[in-house]
Amino acid sequence: MKRADVMPQPLPAGRDAWPGRAWLSRPWLAWTLILAGAAVLVAPLYFTFVFATHGRTEIFNSPPPLWFGSQALSNLHLLEERLPFWRNLGMSLYVAGMTTLLNLLLCSMAGYAFAIYQFRFKRPLFALVLGSMMLPSFLHMIPSFMVMDALGWIDEPRALYVPAAASALGIFLMRQYIGSAIPRDLIDAARMDGCSEFRIFRSVVLPLLKPALGTLGLITFIASWNNFVAPLVVMRSPEHYTLPLALRSMQTPNNTEWGALMIGSAIAMLPLLVAYVLSARRLVSGLTAGAVRG
Image (cartoon, rainbow, N blue to C red):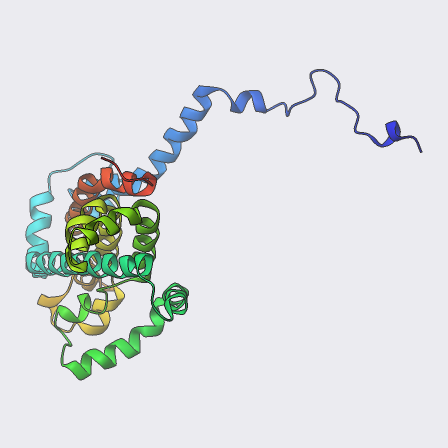
């Protein structure tokens, strides 16, 4: 068999591309797909705010209301009658804030140690940290409850933020960022100037971690704010409930005030939106930056 018989033959002119490729390359089609996807993603958020301003009967009309109504205040009063709502909101803010602060501090210190220092069992310890991310979160529910009960922390806010004070994802993120963005020469120069190890971390390393800290802070705050299982396990008093657990307690098989539930959900979204707006720039920088500036 001759070589020319097995070589691929060129396609005839006009048939070298898929016929639909020209349509997909049109800008208006790309913008239409992007806008359609954005509408699908934003629709639940929009209807949560719309339903928060309508009563229960209006929400279940056919078709459902598409614009804002006038019962937002009555829904809010009903929510305040059913729940210690503002106390639950404060509890959520306190737990999420403490969890975020502890995560930023402990994960940055652990990531710095894994990235900079050399010590025995460093690689097995880091592999153990990464391996803990593979475990399902519900596996530690019963051990965590037993430890909190032994400490006498049941129905206490610290039973929520102390076990979540450090995360494997945070340690991994910080270790990778410090290893790629913090030059060793900068740390060695600080040591030659007589800085202690803690002062090097606080005054030299920590200011350079702002993009990574912003990213980790936003991820941790959202995870803690939306956490439902941990408060369900350790909290007992309704006034100590966080918002997801408090709003869930309003749902009953026979009588659920959906208007009040919707306005509670809408208010619960506001801190997340504010946190995202404040840290969006840090989030983008943390995901894209890989070098020291300045």
